[in-house]
Image (cartoon, rainbow, N blue to C red):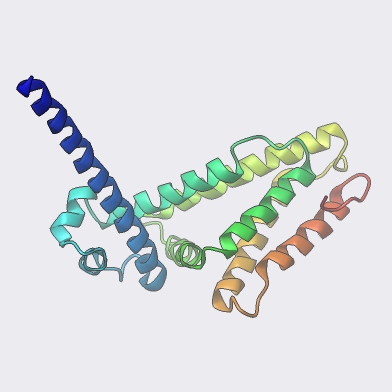
Length: 216
């Protein structure tokens, strides 16, 4: 009996240790978002991130092998969350696709730190030697692929005009979203990113849909 009790207690202690580790890992990721947003990747310091979390740099490196590993984990965590929330299903119409992008813009407008981090890192990642360069190349390729596939289905169904260059439209949309996002981050109190993107999406749909219809 005592042996079984000891075994159960050991398992419970193990679960508690894992829970503490997971919670600390999430705190490190959250702190890293703020540091990468404020200083970029190169000027951010593992020691400062660890200090904000209340642990040593060695403690941080117990969870992440290096600053490069931490950066990749931050980006992959935010990307996975966005995929599950906004791109988990195929869109049946172009109007549905753009309505979903408006919701994504609204969501980003509520996450200033994360959105600022994205802008800073995307700019830095123009350098092929930057550790986030492969991530951003892949991200834009996947985004254009998902959007252009939805738009092509809309062309095939007759919702969009025949001959619409779906890749060009998808690339333009990504550029407009990021451009509006950059202006919003610079002055979030004055610049209304959501209304500007909603207006753009509505104009775009009216120009490429067969019936000249905008957002639902």
